[in-house]
Length: 239
Image (cartoon, rainbow, N blue to C red; front, side, top):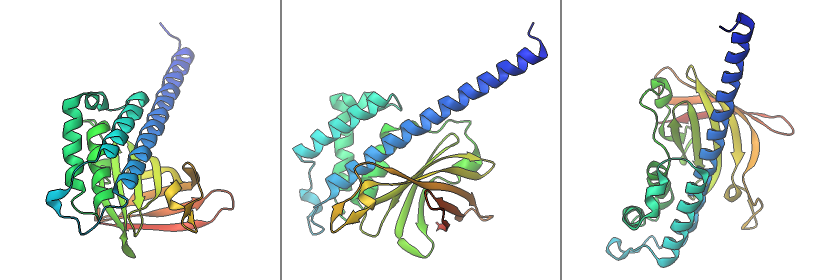
């Protein structure tokens, strides 16, 4: 029988191990979401808004990029993505993408939503119900052309920010506890463009963020503290 001290030490070690595993899961799902967002930006760029919906098809190039994306997510070891390496699974995804191509204005967001739902793990049935209230599509309260797609996996919070032109601007990876989100805010490569060129080659840590639901569950408010030279920015999203 373990002594109280040894028992406490064992509990601490198990807790730290679980926290490490959770942080690893967050990082891997965050990487997968970033890959999916980049894929959406790449294949939706150049679609003619006037294209007839009946003529939209998934090009050979898009299919090749989709195969590469699936392979990378399978390598991360998350979700049920492995089944989409088979021809039948690929066919399902390709049909979904063809539907997304029908509207050039919403293509990026539809592709992101479709692929993250298909390729990433679903939330646990025992997931915190308060955390699930955070999931879905949000808008900047002062400018609804800026959108935020939020995914909840258990207590893990992941968001992708889309700017006015559908560009992937930023993302957040965090943990939900008692209705409060605490995590890291990242600048995405497509979100930092100078003279039409991307300045970043990969996502960069932009700062720390704390968010909470308003009482009516229709607003997500909080603060973002930038890295480097600290500056606090008010965050206010609405349904």
